[in-house]
Image (tube, rainbow, N blue to C red; front, side, top):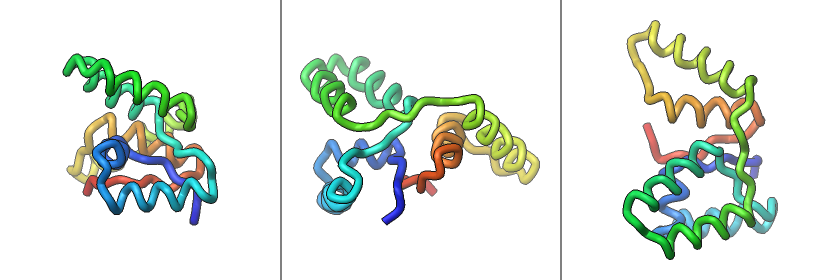
Length: 118
């Protein structure tokens, strides 16, 4: 199993106890000890919880985040994201900026992006 970066949708499924996602994460944790996700995913989940005034879930997420690995944006990851953006734009298939930034983080860190997105 290669090192992975979890996309926001996968992490959300994990927190909803989706059986396949939880099982896969548990197997991954046996080898790598920590789950990895981007600072952008951290923002997306935390902002969604705060919007819903979900204090208890926010606290659980903050504890979870401290026990796992949050991978930041870097100049390299943003450069990669901008190249993907330009290439897709030329092909007429634009993708949401948030998704491109998460992909750039994965690529800059040689991680496999695990997502439920198409």
